[in-house]
Amino acid sequence: MAYVRRIGTIAAVAGMALVLLAVSGPMARVGRPAPGFTLRDQDGKTVTLASLRGRIVVLEWMNPDCPFWKRHAAAGTMRTLAESHASKRVAWYAVNSTAHLAVERDAWAREAYRLPYPVLNDRSGRVGRVYGAKTTPHLFVIDARGRLAYAGAIDDDPGGARGGKPGGVNYVARALEELLAGKPVGVPETKPYGCSVKYAR
Amino acid sequence: MIAAAGLLVGVFAGGPAGGATVEVRCELVANGPVIGVRFIVPRGKHVYWTNPGDAGLPTSVEFRLPEGFRAGPLRWAVPEKFVQPGDVTGFGYRRELLVWTRIVGPEGGPPAGSKVRASVSWLECDDRECVSGRAELEAAWPLNQMPDAFDRWASRMPEAGGGAKPAGAPGRWEISIPWTDRSGGVRWVAACDPRAVVTDVVVRAGDPVRIGCTIAPAPGSRLPAGGVEVVVGYKPFWREMKGIAVEIPAGDIR
Image 1 (cartoon, rainbow over the protein chains, first blue to last red):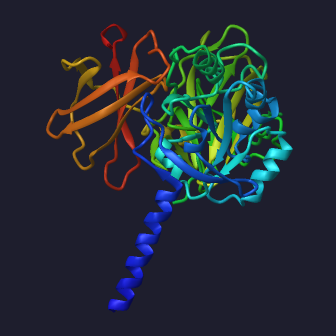
Image 2: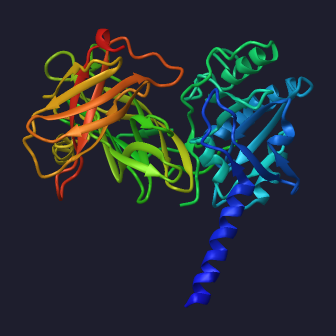
């Protein structure tokens, strides 16, 4: 019995260590330091938030089966924005917390939608839950000092009425321009829209 | 896709890269001068209320009626609240949804054979996937009469009867509702419009039930100019969700 209990304790400690490896710090809140994380991309390369300090970081929660994310991916909403800022001290990452999807789908999605940025694997959902990612897409912009500067929707077109055509407000584009100009983000939080993130139960 | 005179429909999915067949079916139905769109939702899936919650998309119905007639305000039944993994809250309907309105126009209704049309869109989801759907419905008047379905859904419409007054702090309100059915408790309080959020709900039992809550704009949103309609959802034992609608006047929301 004691043996079983010891095994259980070891497993619990190991589990906690795994959590600490994936994400650290309190829940994400706009204006506060963004929770640190360690995740692997579609090629197995380790990415930590700490290693990106000094750059503006965009985290884009994605799900290649979600019609909202697919609409934007097909229209190039995020790709165009990421490409236009690629040389401007901005690091862009997609994050996939869809528990039931095979990891291979990340590489597939990158190729199918010509994503110029890595897709980070968060199938455990630990990073997504700490950031409070609710939808796909759900965007988070972290400033160069490591503070969460924006959280919310990519734009103001939940129903896709504009069909990917320009117009309206792209909140992330605006936040990036403001941060790059050294200004505070005017609209730091919006209500995200999309499919619910399909976390593990 | 057009479904002439009856059931069937919906096919479109998921934007340019989509292509899956949508499983929700919908049809135009009527009960005298009251017309509606009835959705049949596959087991395990749900479609969304006017306020979908943290994620999802409001179901949309737009009627187009013969000349001289128009549709009144849409009526939406009290939804169920879902709490999905990751603490993602949703409001919606499982199995079936009937959205209805009353035809406004000359007595006697539209001429026989004239066309009633509805543009319908929705998002159907379960814990694993979401699929968006859209349909153009068309049927000749008189529509398929389905009084039983209307009777069934009438009992699920929000009742009027609550009152609200500011409760001191900015955005803080006290809602009071007479409690005629004490067998179940208040399950949730939510705004019908996703531009408003209701938080910090405190329920004090009694008759009337008093509910303290904070009503504020959703992040990045402005509150609707005409005020906010809030629904207090409660569930009597062994029965479906019921709700009481309370109007919060626009001028008093801070």
